[in-house]
Length: 95
Image (cartoon, rainbow, N blue to C red):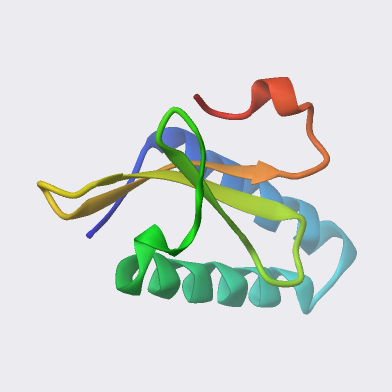
């Protein structure tokens, strides 16, 4: 099961709003990349290596975003911590 904190949801909304300003196709493509990433997280969340403090990252296809997440194996959940733009200051990433 995927769990989202309010922060990642707001980051996703901001990305969609940004893409709406410049393209008619990019928002739908971004949402499609997110859905693909969500499917991957639900099917095989442990496929991505741990970056630090138990936090893993999955890069979205064709977009400069990473989904940072942690796995709780006992509860069988994946908690998405951030949808982080890869050009942002790395000191601001979650964890």
